[in-house]
Image (cartoon, rainbow, N blue to C red; front, side, top):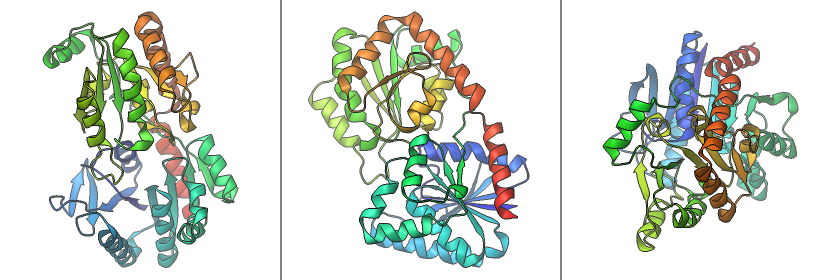
Length: 381
């Protein structure tokens, strides 16, 4: 079976959804599915076609952001899918509702079936507020299959009158062999190269540097944390590259101008496991989420997570056992939770161990890939 994966961003642009898709593809290929990724060509230096991890990646459109590149991307995507329709069985979109609507529209034109995976909660109902949004919802709701990853997304779909028979619950997965605690020797070596003492507490954040990820809340909390624990360091993994609402520069200026200590902006990385494997605490201050890939990876790495009580987070974390939850936007309570773990290393270790056990027992790529294979076979009949 031939699957076209449509996503607005893909490597080398870094992010949780892209990372999740990239890790899933080898499992689908192993099961005999022929997969091609179709994405947007954001920069001139990006090749129009290349193989990444054995999968063909095709970048469409002209480099740049704004209205014209977006329109041309949509038009060229349609031309490509229509022209290649004889070699397509399933069109599978990832991420946004608007992309899902496009996938459904082109699936109808080409006589194919489509799957729409919605990565983030909190956006679906907003489409009802404008004419353009209602048109997008019209096509989105007619998808052959919509992947729901959390109870919050499920509720939004129900409130948008999406047919229940079109909704399938498939969560994200994590590779426990890749994301795991580092050995004592490797941990010591990594920290030594970065200038950290072996026992220096390291707190880590991983995600896109955009408002919904809550980095501003974390930095407010950090000001409180380092007053009591001045030797603790915060590593920030990710960037705001190619995000129209990027707050990366704003946050860096805030840290510099207010002289907030021990914060390290590490940028994007292809190997987040090297950071997660040596840290102690993972912070996840998001304002809205689907089923967060970054949180899965941190838990698999044996980190004790401190996370906002939202969406897919509450599906993953049992408060006090596999992580600590705090009310969204509440930087004071977040700081209190971080300080509690810094002051109680035995609790921190125990929570991290339980977090790893929980995700490895429930969210493996073998299990998730099998669910996708069954879904493709069922809707393609």
